Length: 472
Image 1 (cartoon, rainbow, N blue to C red):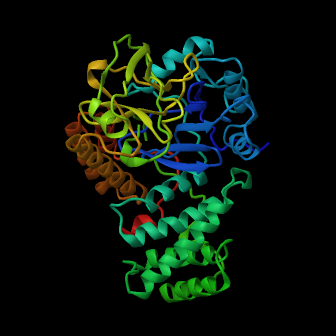
Image 2 (cartoon, rainbow, N blue to C red):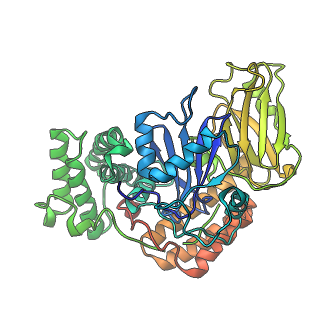
């Protein structure tokens, strides 16, 4: 079997029986947040500042029966991401009914290749605690550059801070990045949709004069991208002809070239430099977001009753219980079957940062009740707030949410400057990002951003600049 696309030396697996989720955690996303890639029955998050690092992989188990009996497209994607040994170890956690985190074996062997030698079960709490510290890294990071490129392009295609030309170009780059990945990741439909929709959008922009690359290099790279998109599934003959004509208009010197060639560089491009880091917020993604936890031994946090009044029938009770150091259960008595689309969240009170998110499901012990189980970091309960929502991406209280969004936006700008090789701009942007996270109350992310600014570089591996990075 080919090498797995996620070859990080350290990944921690967990089975959540209540949510019926297989969870793999590598590192907590840093000051630029995370970027997501949707796969059949799974969602992968990578770090934006250091895109060779896995943040989290969430895999949905069947709603009933054997949790290891994954649908074939999901199993194929999981095998391609983790490899056979790690996939088997992850699914065995569910078969054993394990309720704790366990280190998955190294990518090519039954034991990890890092300096820690303690048994997996004993080391799991240590790993969880370390994932929240600011200075320790496990392994070099191993997200394949082409997969990292897809994650960054997907993020760019939905970034409200970007120009429309940049967003549309990022969508086309996502199509090209996805088609270069193994077929068993199940991305064929996404490739066709991105090529068709992005192709229509960029032709529309060109028709009204809103596609104007600022320099010859950007024009050449964009032209090369358009020629590649013209050959993708989902692009009809007429659209392909229009894309090739637009490419020739942008860069006549390369109008006879059939691929990206030297104008755009290699789409599996190599590398640029980081450290590690902390997780995504509601504004970054609308899918499942979870964190493994460090022991804390704290009482239950406050429940936001106002949130319940907005989404629950009048008179519905909610019971919040910190069942263990690293687990919170939110129970809605008598509401089983009535909570479709309802989620429980744990937010940090100071800045509104989303710490955990889980759907409501029928409880095992009391099937009439709806229950959500959330894994949380080692933070005092007094600093946490639990709420219920129909919109996982809904912002936290306005002021705190805006501060977090500003900090994340600053981090994304800094990461983009880094990919473009503009060290002076990257240093300035990381300094701004550090200040923004300090204002948002997140000392860890602030310290990481400040460290990036002092180093003058971030990642040692990962994709080079996207074409869309040049169109901001």
